[in-house]
Image 1 (tube, rainbow, N blue to C red):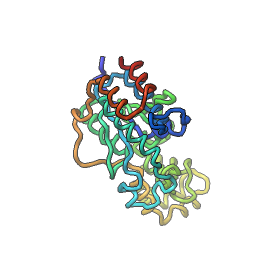
Image 2 (image 1 turned 90 degrees about the horizontal axis):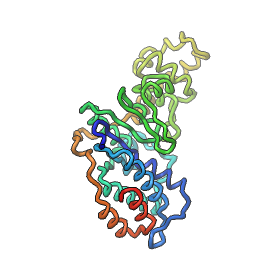
Image 3 (image 1 turned 30 degrees about the vertical axis):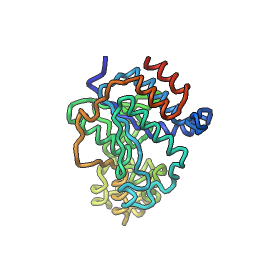
Image 4 (image 1 turned 90 degrees about the vertical axis):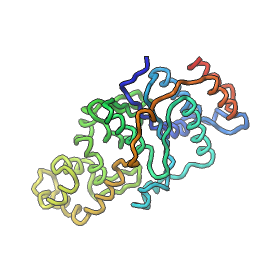
Length: 296
């Protein structure tokens, strides 16, 4: 039976990148081009697709690398990453085509990242009273998890719910951007406030809440039951604008227009058409065998 009460939100790019780095170049198309990332992603997707039979699902793809609004705000954002080369770019495109052919709506944008697009679809699910399962390994997406939701990593098959995530972060999940703004996020090349580590950042946010309240009451830092509060106060002095900018980078944003449930509703899979696409893409018998195994 198809699950009609849950919206599944797939962070597709993160699993494609994982397959790219984790699966050796043992898979090639009929022209000799490596398709290891496509194989790993597609096999993973088919396995869970058959298990879940979701009525509502979207797959979000990153197509805003170095072109999104965050780079306009902070040019060094993700400057520690390299753009996908031609081989990986080709495989990313194939993964999107195969996902669409499976009947899963795909979201991609030149301004917004996959995380933002997941937040966009999550807003639709919440408005319609449906729970969400966010399928990702990205810690930043924990800020979206509500009472009826979970964060599910397909690779390790770990599902984390709001209470577990709040215990892990030690702050309300909506305060995660405040914490990361202070401590920084090396994955996205966000420096944070020099000298403010994870433990201190969490303690400050637990006590003060949003960054605005922290900086409006900065002198109170000295009276906190923490080691080196005078030094912490000195490190924070004059850094409010930087911290607010970093939080802006970490918070999730999406287009003003609303998505509808109809736009995130899956379609029936036509295995013959899927095989036809695989043939047209010259992916070969290995991929046809996956369709036979999971869909026929």
